[in-house]
Image (cartoon, rainbow, N blue to C red; front, side, top):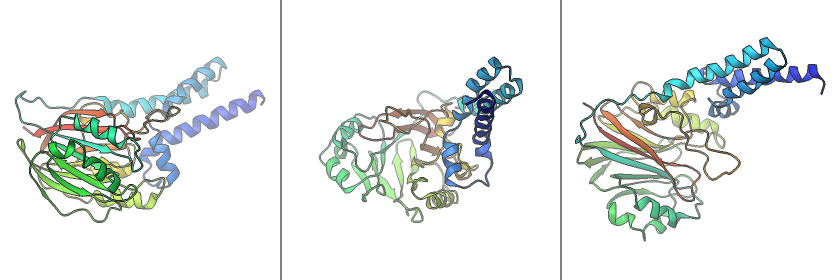
Length: 313
């Protein structure tokens, strides 16, 4: 490859990075390729920095400026996600803690996962990819003794969901329009009654149109009072479909605490580190986000999510 061709390739690469950088805001792009590109943000835009260094060394000032511009745009977009927006609260204010774990339908370490989940100090446990085999394995674990109120919708492959609670609960009408099962319940916790919806959308890589339809349907759900929508959305903040779902009603708990750049997938791939957050806890304005944490789920390809919420001041 001669010198002129190398610089041409550098320009094409920089143009591709620019396209990926603006893709979250070009909402008319609704293809599977656009969805994959958006999942790479903001990390893809930072690849403009090494291109800029090479361009400076080669005295290609225009290329260097363009590459720096791409990286700078990515940083500017990502910066608001690192700002802590929590409101002050009294240390003794009542709270409710909810955890979610994608168990992975073919998890071969479900017994280890049960041990890890049993150690969690949470009021509510929620699951996606909850299969009949998982239900049978967890039945002999300490989980059932600690979380005595349960709604279980086991199903083959990735469609099953479940909700375990330490406190009494009332099941509400499920959201039948999503491909995977959805569990909705009012949990009567000491901090107050809280509606919890356990979500799992389709994978955009497997059924892209169904994934978009799932998120579009969830965007029409009107929460009644304090509510948390938690689970595997198979979408990140950079996807317009998730931002439309959130609208003005829902806030992402990780964004509230300034951890909007944290990732939950993929886990367990030594060649590919976690780069996108697919697992979210969305909360309504009637709730304050007190804390958010991630935890390891043995055998799963997702990190688990723990959110602590309390009644808004």
